Image (cartoon, rainbow, N blue to C red; front, side):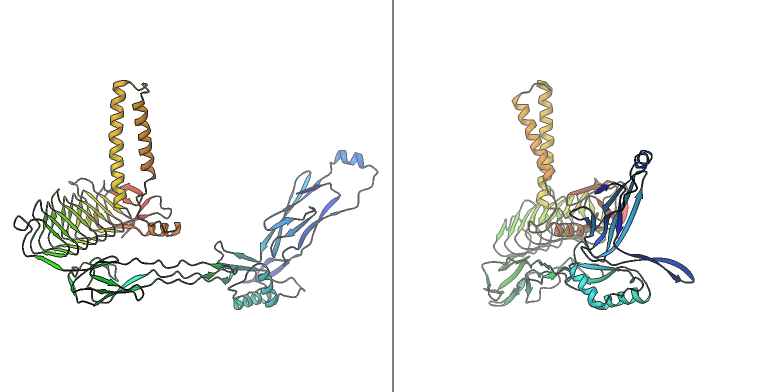
Length: 561
């Protein structure tokens, strides 16, 4: 800022003209501004002749000297000496004057010739018509100017030529015309397993019209010794991008895939081929492949069979009776039901009837496919398919939980690491249910345990304070208070969302926005809904809704399904 006496005036160093144009029979005034280059002087302070000395003192007493101030606006800067204003970019200067009783102020800003988007992937041109009797810009001059402004990649010369023509021939002001685009990086593709044999339809597959394929999983696929089961397709590196400034943009490389094979499977890391080492039945859980023998139990698992502990795939012709256990190294098919029993499988599990009983516990590494569930606890690493209803059960899935449209969830806790799709939730006579998507089951269990521990310790502390007084200051009370603070801190810091440590913040946000709960029927008031770390309770009944996170990931919103 430069403030001096009235013997100094501001001398503009650029030209503006107003021309008259006719638009649909109406005359319109259009201001044309001189195009200036980066570093060009826009205005300077010049000294005028001093007024005569006679009467000067009396004049200054009557009229104090006025100050003249030259201010830099956007994209302009004062010179080192402070007596000139320079353009920081190429473009069109705009001046704004302000007058007070003792002060004259002139601010000059620049309308940039070219503006670059925040991500540097697009450049836009603003072009005024040439001044009268001034040679118009040629294409090569404009390109040189843009290069001086840093635009190094993606210029569209045809659009530039068209802008020059319209500004010259039609005296048209071209505002923010897209003239250059960068090349976005192409991310690499993650490594994957390509199965080399017919695996059959996978239950829970999303069809093209949005419906879900609930065909029964094909189990116990036979393989021969040496048969090719799958091939690992390596990750690709992707292709880097470049922005309009010519800067290279790194791409995200595809992530490698760790293949896990059992003792009866051969994996050639060089070729990526996975083959059966002996004949048997195939079990695939995510990226883990096993070939096992098949153990068949023709009837029920009961006193006549005892508990089943097999390093094989297991098919049970009947049901698993109360109090018994089944532990299968491979896939497990139960053609009957499970009643107050314990089921463990390192493969996938198909139960063709129901799973019932408060004492029933199922821990499955892969997917689970069940007709109905009543008062049972199920933990699965993959997808859980429910074909009918869920009554007061606890279900935790690492992947999706998918229920047919006519299914219902009554009470209990249903937590999906992926998405949740169900027909109806709750009824007027049932206790409220908790349904969750994008939520880590193990973290949720820790969340429950912390809540319970805090309640118990707060009760214990309150009881002790009532006995000894709130101002006792006993070491026992101080220790309990400190422990409660630590528990509360852990509860606040606990992250329930399913994510990977390798994910970037942008990837985590995109993943969270894709998590949803879809209810095709009625979901009753009082139902608790959780998506990751955000929770809400329905105040009224709603029908056919999709619940997802808001754009800022701070609240759950309800959308028509």
